Length: 133
Image 1 (cartoon, rainbow, N blue to C red):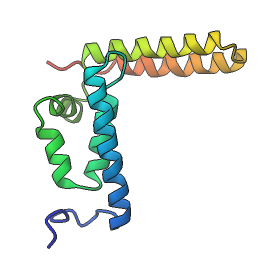
Image 2 (image 1 turned 120 degrees about the vertical axis):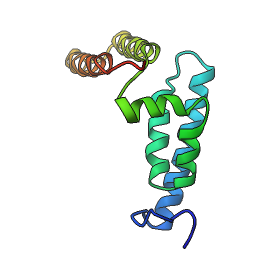
Image 3 (image 1 turned 180 degrees about the vertical axis):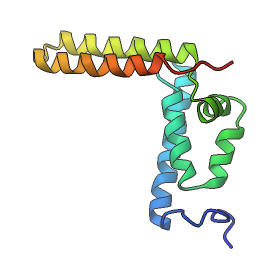
């Protein structure tokens, strides 16, 4: 049996797996940018990478979870649905910055209200997640 498929009979067809694996690599790259650049989120991209890798390459999925820098936030999310305080603060700051930019761009007031409501719900959800530790 193919090593990549061993124990994973529910993997999608090969073309879909290649697409998902490509996305997983893209998301890891974006996540690594977030490690190096302030203001670029890391954890959301890593979560997307883990999801796409889990559906395309069990080996890459294991590599992500065993990586010394990338693995811990994935494990915290998987085991406790926990998000670090720094990640929460950065996410809420970026939501506020995004809304502010849209406001100064002169978006329609009803669109701004709708986005504000969505951002408040999203930010509230984020800050109410458990913290690791």
